[in-house]
Image (cartoon, rainbow, N blue to C red; front, side, top):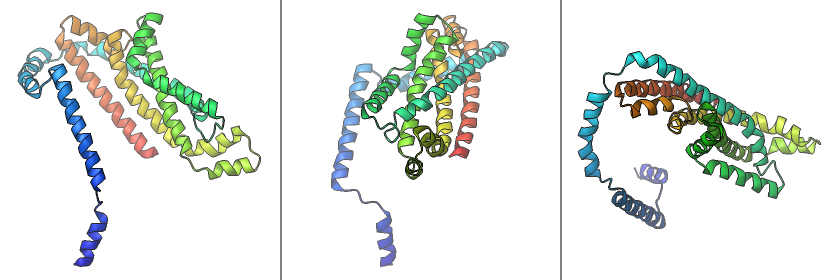
Length: 269
């Protein structure tokens, strides 16, 4: 019996007093921030609960039944949304891969260049794709091109960051062996790095594709093409039966894409 108790005690992680104090402090800060946020936004829990009947009434009376005759128009915009997401992800993957080598400390030995590329990637990831879309709509005009460019710029920052961190975590032995035999940097990358990172690279690209599909829906609200563009128009005209069709078809499309992407990523990893 005592052996079982000892074995159980070894399996249960011990939380130190310092860790408990840290967790308590973090929870206190979170609760305080929540209260401050609720006061400033007036989004009190009871107000949200009081508003639920209004939301349910709107869904039942205005959104249903959906206008199935509008499905063809929605499908065309969904295809454009998919094309935006796929094109931006493909281009960003092509560009992000070489940049990721320059942003990896075990490949790029020049500290100045390494830090410069890291800083560059941080800038790309800091600017939200919605802000990029607003700027690009002003430059190239309303349409899918602005959306593709916004998603491309944002995706390069995400992908290059993820891939560079993967490169830094790979097994260094193959790289050292190639260098010891006189291999140049291209051979080190081709034979030592790429075979180790390709499953992760593909998985990250699919993950970014999922993000871009969702993001492209929102970008339409600022004129960057896709399903969001017609959703904004139908909301402005109070055509809620058409809005319902857009929401339902978008939900189905995004769910299918996420399911396929997750299955592929599970097989890769």
